[in-house]
Length: 266
Ligand SMILES: Nc1ncnc2c1ncn2[C@@H]1O[C@H](COP(=O)(O)OP(=O)(O)O)[C@@H](O)[C@H]1O
Ligand SMILES: [Mg+2]
Image (cartoon, rainbow, N blue to C red; front, side):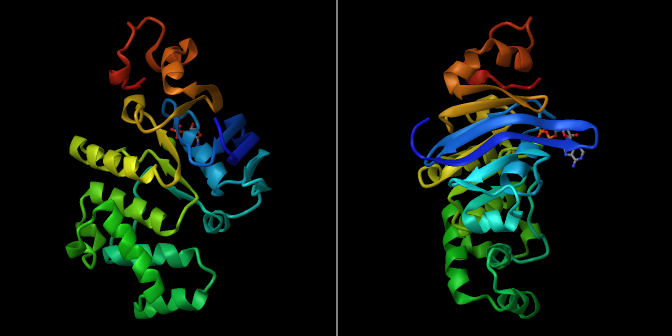
């Protein structure tokens, strides 16, 4: 890990009633890095993302962004500061035209309530916002022919790309993607992976993924969560060889998996 720390959790925890979903997680991301968070289902990955991005307030510990304690800031406030995330299940408005999903995403991050209402009730697309939205759609490779079509018409893979475009239009400093490849066909996985290879050149990227093999070439560092704890962290090769990680992922008795095929299904 080199460079300036841009995002950090200090001893962060989240409790739901008597259940401790995340506990004592110390985590750092440096500017310009592409990193992965992996772990079995239920490990606490999404909950940890929700703590980083402001959907949940921590039960203990704190979140720091560019040196500032942001633990008390809402998700929208953190988004405005440059901390932008996507969701495990694609989260777009199906009834709106494709382009309007972007316009709404951008307006959501802006304080001007009037322009937001004007857009929602009059469907006037602010020109300055529109240019950023079109650039983002172009960048993720969604055909201009469908920009004015209902979002419901898009394939799941294109909806995922739309969601990434929505995140890009917000000009993130750190982009956090929760299982961006989940639910996609093999063809769509390749397309979105190509897109992420491009995106990572320009942004600090944090990717949650369940299947290790899918992000091996996208990230320089992996952090492994298990039962709410961060159990290992390091370069991809080190993590693949780590006995604790191998136990969690493949079980003690399993033959050694080839790294390239390390699917990571428990
Ligand atoms: N809002 C919630 N209320 C109660 N329990 C939750 C909530 N969100 C997540 N959990 C629980 O926390 C654990 C971790 O979930 P999650 O963070 O979604 O794991 P992962 O993303 O690694 O699959 C799971 O046991 C899940 O049921
Ligand atoms: Mg999850």
